[in-house]
Amino acid sequence: MTKLRVLVACERSGVVRSAFRSLGHDAWSNDIVPADDGSPYHIQGDAIHAAYTGQWDLIIAHPECTYLANSGAKHLYAGMSKANGPEADRWARMGAAAQFFLSLLNAPAPAICVENPIMLGHPKRLFGIPEPTQIIQPYQFGHGETKATGLWLRGLMPLRPTDVVEGREQRVFRMPPGPERKRLRSRTYEGIALAMAGQWGGNALDARRAA
Image (tube, rainbow, N blue to C red):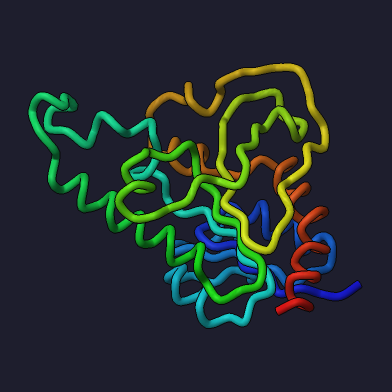
């Protein structure tokens, strides 16, 4: 098997990195904080720097969704009411997040996936972020839950469902407030990670050969 160099940007859990390494690929996670599992295969630092300097065959990126997700639309306005006018700081942060997203999507690798929840219309309209290639749900990959997630793909085929199961629990959405909520909500489902590794290893190899 041909070993691919894979960067999983903005990942502290190591779930996707571990899925690729289990298949023999040279996969590394990256985040501004250490890996939760203490793995040595983790690059602590800026995701853009890692993506643009590593000679990667495949980049899978999970940029923070706080300022891009449709679920945060009400925060764009003062007092969470459109009648009060825009919240300038929030719009500025949305713009910075959109530029960060596009920098990852346009990184110099033959195969790229950028993952985010359902996105606001404003970043797409103002900054030219395209529509996602596909939207997936955890229940398509063995987890009986709902969490609509967009995948923006370049040099990769859409992910095929591997195990459609019953159950439509909104577990992630209903997590109570707490210090671990953000980290746990952003963790990739193992079934999705395994599908990425199993299906995209070959896609990325084909993209590398064509580059």
